[in-house]
Image (tube, rainbow, N blue to C red; front, side, top):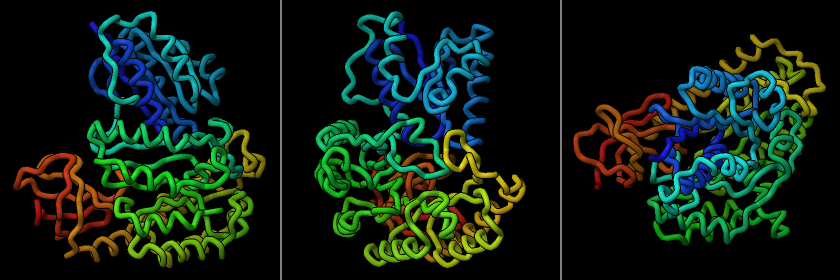
Length: 434
């Protein structure tokens, strides 16, 4: 009888992809694989995040909760992998003895080897993909590269994940084709630095060429772009977004700040005017684009005037989606050497002020969508509502469209939906064409 492996994934969507690849490897060894399951399982693998303070704390708490189960022999094996384990393996081994093994971010084969001795011969079958999805069956993340060559002062990812390594166009098209054959209709392109794609393999940025090839795959209807970078943003990507009907009018471009002094200290390689020019250019070239961004507040030395500069920028720019993080010092980064001068309560206050501002902006934008007709992808049925998304909404982080379950809708199918009401972060609609 197959043992059940529960892979618990924390952090970003890039971690999800790693867990999905690992799941397929374990499945082929004869294990039954579940993602983030509430059911009892024999084995738990925790894929950790080590990006910022809150994420590290969540990872440690999750490990400790399963360590208690391992101590009480409710689990036969507990394994920890991912970014936190990569950064702090020795410390974790010294402190948490109930964990059977710790692995880093590039150790999928080593983890697989650990499980080979307990494999159930003949139980596993070859997957029709190299991944077992942790997402809903009709969308998937496609990680086009690993690591990062940037040196942002606040970011530890290059220390954890290493230098930028692009997957080839051929390998990504093959992977996407397998996903499409499984029923995936939406590809969400992710990387630590998506617009850097191809420089190491092809000698130039080739994200546009990749997207064109992916759009030729039968069954793929939406291609979404996440984790772009403002410096060196390729113009031809805007051309593809504007002209290719399969590419969603959506861009996720973390700007981090608007103060030129802060941006220079962050080593972002752009200043305020360049940022303003880029935002304007994107909106001019792709009318109606949904613009998601993120900012960091409480960076060392951030003055009240610089925070107000950021606040005023957000108020003027009116981003469709926005996230805000309080700065946390990360060992090994250049910003770690700076004095963390901002009190935690001030950081929290600045986060709250920006998010309160964004809440009002989001409400106004959503109210303006009442009466429009949108193409909506249905994700799930929840209570009295079918829950879907428009092309302007990325899964798990953006608006949802709620449709009263007065008629039977097919999960994973597209419908024409009229928006009839809205609140700060959700839209309400009715199907006008099945």
